[in-house]
Image 1 (cartoon, rainbow, N blue to C red):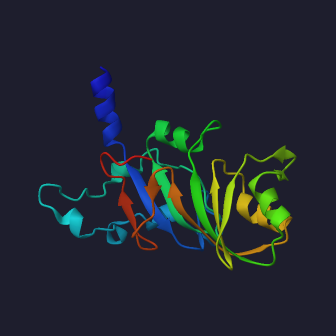
Image 2 (cartoon, rainbow, N blue to C red; image 1 turned 45 degrees about the horizontal axis):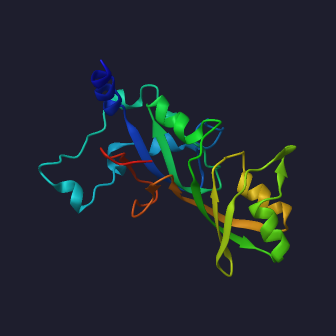
Amino acid sequence: MATEALEDQKKLATFIVNKPVGYVSSQPEKGYEPAVDLIVPENQFTNSRDRNPKNPIRKLQSKDFEGLATAGRLDIDSQGLLIFTQDGRLAKKIIGENSEIEKEYLVRVVGRLAKQDLEKLRYGLSLDGQKLKPAKVEWMNEDQLQFILNEGKKRQIRRMCEAVGLQVKGLKRVRVGQLRLNDLPEGQWRFLEPGEKI
């Protein structure tokens, strides 16, 4: 019985999408396209290692969209790694209330940041009357910060930056758990591969 459930779970579709700016993650807003519309055969990413005849490329089927949900949102002005899945257990693992899954972002900013404000970004800010969980925040270069969070409040990074006087010019999610965006081109998608961990 447990083996049967595991096999059923393996059949559930999980899509990895590199969302461009201008698409909404889930609920379509008037005049904007939902990112799920990117999941069409012509946008499927295949690279040379996928062309192994022993490992045929999984083709998109209409049943892959049944019960599909976004596992973590990215706002319309953000880009990068977005996950859609039919697997409720996986979605809960990524975005559930007690999730410890890290999400990594590269954030281009304008403004000056005092040392104590960097510490506030790491631990010390509240949003909507709630203390934020500790975050890992490091400078990557003179105008780019790396944020690693394990929570995802609405527009959290943008609001954190505003609270310390920084303006966000670009925000890209590059990792969720162990899953990295890597070479997936913007606007394209692929299936989560068997054995790939999040």
